[in-house]
Length: 290
Image 1 (cartoon, rainbow, N blue to C red):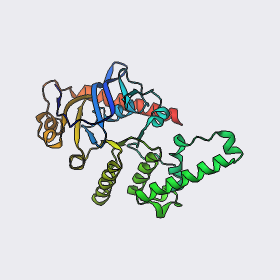
Image 2 (cartoon, rainbow, N blue to C red):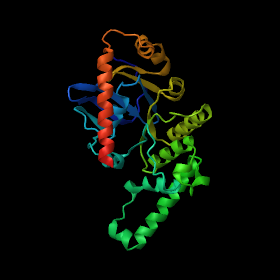
Image 3 (cartoon, one colour):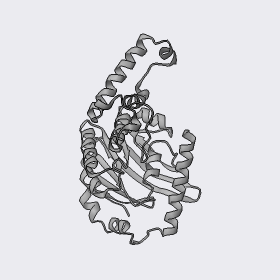
């Protein structure tokens, strides 16, 4: 049974209802409900193989859920990543996916493509409308680099940035699509404490701009300090959701992170199979992108 603590009434940005994702006979995500409201930072945690990234992929159109639906501001989303981005949801990835040989500014400009209305002929002929759109995109990209603390490195190649700044650049590129909801997949992975603190401050600043945030993270202290609500997945099922203090005290959460079985928990063999299926599906998706 899922324990949920409700929050004050707010506009629902994301409404995922009954989301289930199966790979063959394996169920990686099972009947998960999750909402994110305006002005909220919501955390999604769980042990390795819990289905967190698979759930993210269902939200962003990389996977088509076997069952359930995903709605953004009341409209059911089509299972196409570019249409999900166009609707108002942006994301970063667990593994950094920058254009290494492009500049910092160029990487952010790539993120503007869903908000640029000029067509191919306008670009080829360098018509006035294209030039104006290009100037506006460049100005907006520089604003985002200023916001993320990267303006001084606008002309640097992305590959030459320190790791923590590459993470910031991914966030800046995601923000370039002007989202109402930002999904962050392990934004502090590999960071030192100073970089982690800077990431926390940046996410708070994003929330203060009116953008809702849903974040996956393994750093429990980080997530509990950051989030208004936290949901916990264990082997694809949401076992508890609520404020940090409620989640931290839940015996099932403690058991899951300590590796102690609880009633109804799947065995190690099932957990390993689901994790392998997720990895295979992710490899196939990345292969299709190339």
